[in-house]
Image (cartoon, rainbow over all chains, first blue to last red; front, side, top):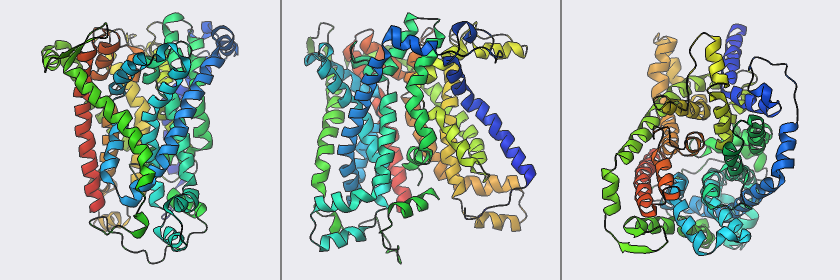
Length: 278
Length: 317
């Protein structure tokens, strides 16, 4: 925006040619997934060059009629929604404190939580889950899954929110202080409204990351609490050649991420890279 | 760019950032505003300790004791589990697989990421749309990614072999051949994460100052020489952040591998993380798995520590 270089038409053509090439390579497989979700199995396993094969919704209706997918979608909403809300409730004030006190060491613990291998947490959680009887109690099982996913959402929220809080000028809070506001009032009425864009980024990304997360539910969920990614994984064994069903399931799993990339792209770009590049 | 517009939109009430006071990070006095904010941190701190620190401590205890399959713990066994790990060829194979995947993917993703990042940084209409499209692989659930690539890699009916046959090459057993499976998995990771790398690098390129390039032009440097001798050094900090982010994810590579091959065939894709999971939940050797996972954590801690130190030094400069 600062130094717009005039692009010659020839250069424009070159850039767009490369755009098409890169899009084919990197978006192609996703498009292939979406396309296959609407094709009959006999066509999916046929030639990829047969572009004119009929499209159908059968793969999706199958998922809902034969495998009660409503159930798994609901489970995914409970786990991702719950862990996002909790992560936000805990992460927003924490990010504020980290920025105002410039706490590097706690930032390190958060970073560690974000970077630690999920497998490390699964084992203790599994032992705990057996101890409290979570495998046979759906309510407990959901509670455990939401808590486990907090390991994803809490550090992510903090990680994403810190740059937003850093942008809020101290002077506003100083003014509020002079008027006698308490720490909580300042936080609630001055800082929080200014951090709203950051909150929307954190909600969006937390939800998607939690929705996509595979490992915890793989080890901890029972048959009634399985979220989408794990049920899709379980499908591989059952209907080995039902690629249509698998692609329809993959499409459903990818839906939140795809929608948000379309509608909230600016925030996603910033959110994904925000911690690293300002 | 985005930052500026955002701030204006979000804070219409904010006073203009008049001659901004120099903010020193080092040894500065705590501003009055920052006093008494600690209570806001307590809930997150408690949860973090419960969810992150306690499990790690419990895993440490597991790794030096012997939790049997029936759930009883035979007590302290010292470093037996670690000794067993060090003597296990399966463990060293996992280390090798993890490192090969890590180095291979990181190198390819960095080189391709710089190239793609340059393309993304060029100011043409539709750049944002293109960026969004490129972001999709990174944000798609790993399960969906793994499933679609399993369809692409299907030995008889998959798209990959159809393409190879169409150009006259022999079909490949992508996931079933121990010599090839690791590279097939690496290809999926490169596909999924190169655009993410490029996005970070593109942001870096767009924030480069113009002066050094102008100076180099006056000295008669060609486009390539400018990119190599002026652009690349200036971009090093950004590229290394992107590389570190990828490093952390690559060292704990799990989802794609577990879904596509479960570590096979013949352990050729058995990364440390997958090995640790299988030891715990399939072989049910809980204590041994704990030792494996701690060794993986050690690797991650070293990397995270280096990352934080490096970033702190950069923000002090």
